[in-house]
Structures are given as C-alpha cells and as structure tokens.
Length: 151
Image (cartoon, rainbow, N blue to C red; front, side):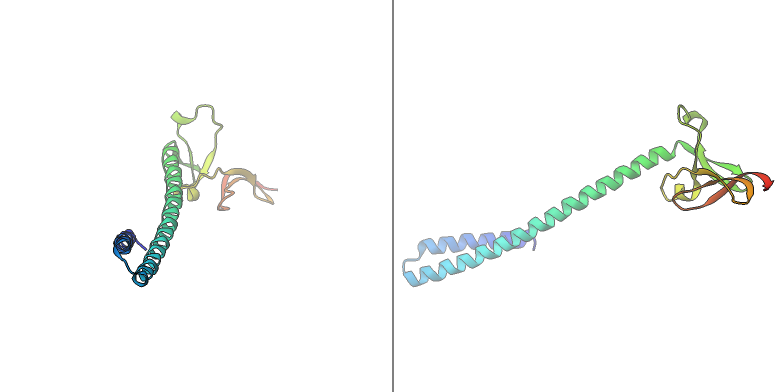
C-alpha cells in the first residue's frame, strides 16, 4: 500500500503489455492478457488504497491547521491579561490596563486560563450569605470577591 508497490505494479504491467504485443500464438496471448489483467487489478487496488490514505492525510492536516490557528489566537489573546488577586487568596486574570479599551471589566478563571481556555467569571452570591462571588461556567470554580456578613 505504498508508492513503491504502485510503481512496481505499473512497471510490471508495462512489461506485460510489451510481452502481449510480441506474442503470436493465441494460447500464450490469452495467458498474457490474464496476467496483464491481474497486474492492472493489483495496481488499481494500490491506487485506491493510496487515494484513501491521501484523503485521510488531508483531513488530518486540516484539523491540525485549525488547532494551530486556535492555539495561535489564544497565545495572542492571553497576552492581554495579567493575574490579579480579586479577593484575599482568590486569583483570576484581568485585562491589563493598557488593553482595556472599550471592553467591560471582566475576569478570566485562572484554572481554565492555564488550560488554554478563556472562561469569563460570572458574578453571583453564596446562598444564605451576603458573600458576592464570581464563578466559572466551565470548571465550576467559585471565587469569593466581597463579604457582607450573614443573612
């Protein structure tokens, strides 16, 4: 199932064609035609196999290019953020001051950030307490951001 087998089969087929051309007697001619057909069949099987491998390689190449593009985009995007302590002992990534522009203030989950994922923390509150939180919708981590006591 490789190019060498394909080339070898093609060369054999060409030699058999030359033999067929030179043969005078009917019985030898028929045997040569059968051998030629067998050789051409083998070549066509190899060609079909190579086409399948080529199609699979093209598919994998496309998938790898897509992954590479996403990784390159993430590498550029993550440079816009820096780690900040959003509450005592709670860290998240925030836009660098020079990158804020028109974007609203937001935080990225530190856990997801290290996994190469951009997950924006969502504001909330702990049930039964007046503790404001930010939680990650991807990994479900919860970060306290401000305390106001118990209800």
